[in-house]
Length: 276
Length: 324
Image 1 (cartoon, rainbow over the protein chains, first blue to last red):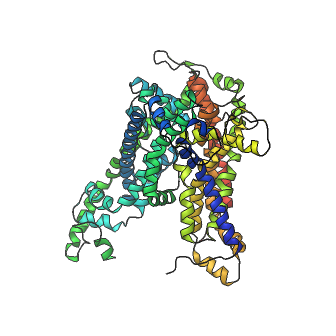
Image 2: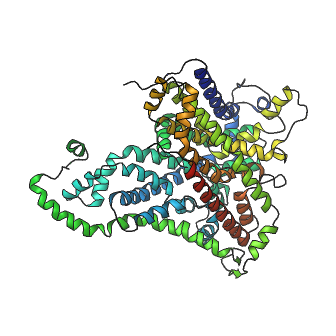
Image 3: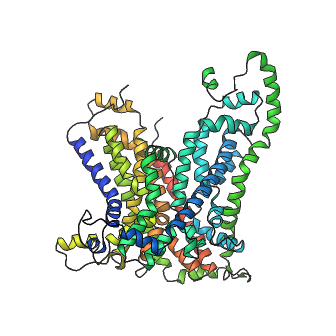
């Protein structure tokens, strides 16, 4: 079987390469510029040159001195993992219910989950904020994670994967005397490792990049996530370009590494799930 | 069929003929169990969404009719529609509405035009090559928004920023402080948001284009249709449901996606030229601690966005062409 059915020749093909290459360069340039300049000494940064002449790590040392990046990275990582696991668990259970059984109210529940995706965060932030402050959860990882343990995005994406699972298996498992939870854990999930894992990566990236809600919950810089630390840096030390860019590099590094290793899975699952 | 089933999971087999009666019995038992089982599985997600989304949403609607300073020790005072009247007089509200609309439209070249072009042209090169480009075009999507804000702040900076250095070389003498100039600030915010989202939309269109049955193109090629004819007769019509959906997505979420850049780069200024719906709600709620203004603006914007969504999905249904 040939994979490429039609091969176009001539100007169309060249135009295709030109357009895609141009967009690629535009997409990558700011990132490349950030990384290159993070390694330049201050006087070189203000000077127009692409590659650093004298490579230095001073900016990284300065950045680490100005904001507690390691603790921030740990906090971001912790909230990313908790939030991802929470959204996966609630999502898996809900998607399983919606795909395995026909029951009264199924459409209603599906609709209720979908609509939350359209509720803007700003329409719920005030009561949630007051609520969490009363619970004493300001400046905690729990405060960041708690309101985000279930997401419409996770449920709907998992619904798609679960729906593709052959229904006869449920009956077969039932006949064999497996209860529904056992069927989920021993039959369904082992076969859906791939989709669940790539959704997990995306949920983690989403949480890592989350800005708005952590910003509300965070009062002190010691308790900030990476994004909040970086934005505090941006407003207070805005013109120390070297350390700022170094901090930005460190803040994006974990995700960029993850992307380099798992590029195919991440892109595939974005393409399948679409939204967000 | 049988082998299909048997490949899944250890210890599982299709009901064999000798066990059919048992199977029927368990099925009846199962029906009784079915009544409550799905609800148990739905419960965690449902409870969380009621507690953290539906309840607060109703509470916000409720608070929009009350005066309250957000301190738990005080009780909200009913004030009818005062908050809504006050909202209309609040400086920045009309700017927020106008800028939100501008952002909705301004993002479309980045979220629709460019991605559609890219995914159409991706069809003209080999799959390997387009996958290579796709990997790079997607990068801005996963980059942290705050990190993106940091880089762009520096690229756009009046003293030594890359853009001004380039302009200087091209003969523009006075450096422009893009983010502090009401003429440019909104455009810059839209550009940064667009730069961040292009890869994501490219991917959505790309996968839709790849999903179109190759048979159509083969038939068209046999009839002598060239690339452009194929694009206008096959690709674009079959892309219409995706086009409609993505346009809706882009319009509804434009101001939410730009929030981080507004907050970190311009704080809604200069002269309210970059304030939008999301920044307005945020600013009024947490800078001035006025729950009335935030809640009433949240209600207005929520209804506004809901109305836009309704209109768009109505129009979209008419414009979509499905491949049946």
